[in-house]
Structure formats: structure tokens, C-alpha cells
Image (cartoon, rainbow, N blue to C red; front, side, top):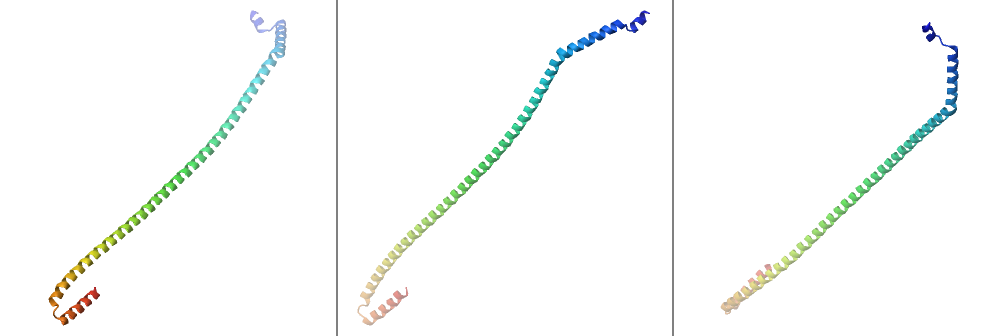
Length: 167
């Protein structure tokens, strides 16, 4: 029977256990569940706020990345423009230097040509003067020798005139 009393519940014990359970349930629902539920709601709200803040931060980061990419693209474009301008300026400077060198070379060549021509003319004049002096001296010697014969003098003068006209 002792075994039976353990297995069979007593009605008084069952009643008091039910009453204590219901009182505990009432007290818990009255005093504990409200704060627990409000704490859970607050926690849920804070998690929701944190998630929305994280989404907002992600959107802001994406905007910043897009802005940074746009700035980088603009900087690259500006760099390319500066490089193109520098290349153009260098090409222009080289062309100007080349043209200036060509002009200076042409001017120097022309000055050398003029100098050579004037030297040539001076040398020719000197040769002509020397030739004339020689001719006069030779003519003088011949004339002294041939001064006696008038016919020979005319013939000699005509030959010299023909030679002078040919040169």
C-alpha cells in the first residue's frame, strides 16, 4: 500500500498544488510577464533600429563608394588631359626648336654662300688684275720689240681684241 499511496494522488495535495500554481501564474502574469514582455519588445525594437541603422550605413557607404569612384574617374580624366596637354606642349616646343634650327641653319648657309661668293669675286678680281698687269707688261715688251713695224702692230692688236672678246 505504501506503493499505492505514492502512485495515487491525494485530492488535497492536488488541490493545493493547483491553487499554488494558479496563484504563481497570476502573480507572474501580473508582475513578471509585463516587464519581461516589455523588455523583449524593447530588445526587438533596438535590434530593428540597429538593423535599419546598419542598412542606412550600408547605403551611405555605397553612396560614398560611388562618389569616390566618380571622383577617381574625374581625377583620371584630369590626369589624362594634363598628360595630353604636356605631350602637345612638348611636341610644339620640339617643332618650334626644329623650325628655329632649320631657319638658323638656312641663314648660316646663306651667309656662308654670300661670304664664299664675295671671296670668289675678290679672288677673281685679283686674278683679273694680275692677268691685266701681266698682259700690260707682255704688251709693253712686245710693243717695244715690234714698235718699228706698223703692220705687225695692227695685226697683233686685232688678235688681242678677238681673244679679249672671246673671254
